[in-house]
Image (cartoon, rainbow, N blue to C red; front, side, top):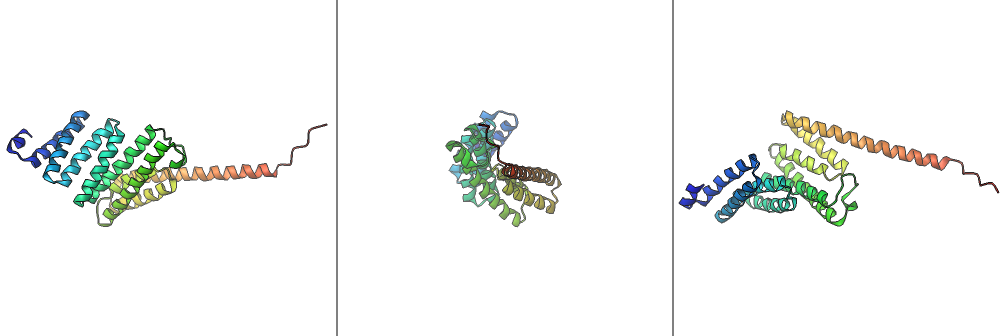
Length: 236
């Protein structure tokens, strides 16, 4: 890195900083990883390299996420998605959108969201705002990944997005995405991730069946209450 800096070669210095940031992440040195990624981002910006800038922000996103700095992670992911979008890198954009969804959900939980509640509208306003952001990003990422798969790209990004859709807490949408991910993994011979998708499908099927049985039980109890004879009047 110092060698390239002395040469005034910003692009190669930035590439070296990416390697440093990646190594620091692997070693668990998150602050140093973030510093190197920020420097690389600045250099790539000066060079007009949108893809390089996106790569730097991918590492910075990881550092923020692992440090529990979810709001900062969302901001970085949104900028990264824009950077990859400028470069026409649809897969990079989809990864960043997934980062937006993942960290928005994490921050919503920090703001008081609870998984057992039925929908984002049931949350407190701050949590609701972040859950809606997560939904929008996940939907856009899924759409981008579907386009990628249609062009013959790997289906791993779509599987990640299917997991992101699960966090919308709409079981029907999650089940549909999981079935699609499973079909694509099987079609592409991706046995490892097909296994993960198959487990997700089974889990969601169980959740849907449990919800159906609960609805049947509640309906039966309601009918039973309606058919009970009225209580006798109290004695005078």
